[in-house]
Image (cartoon, rainbow, N blue to C red; front, top):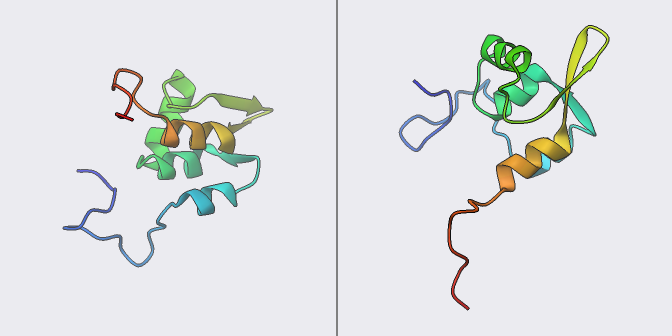
Length: 89
């Protein structure tokens, strides 16, 4: 079951709704747990994907910590499907 909110399952009072504005406010980088939350992943799932190199964004290892570029997160979230034809003009 997905943890993403839907009309049938709105977010619980403690769950953050990630808007582009809120994501941008994180600064230049964020931690893997937050990146995972943005993509609808559990904390442990996000770290597993980061270690396996399968998180949808590049992971930067700084010492013993993992960091993720906020710009990369935004790029993935706002990317369009390259196989979709362009809109008619």
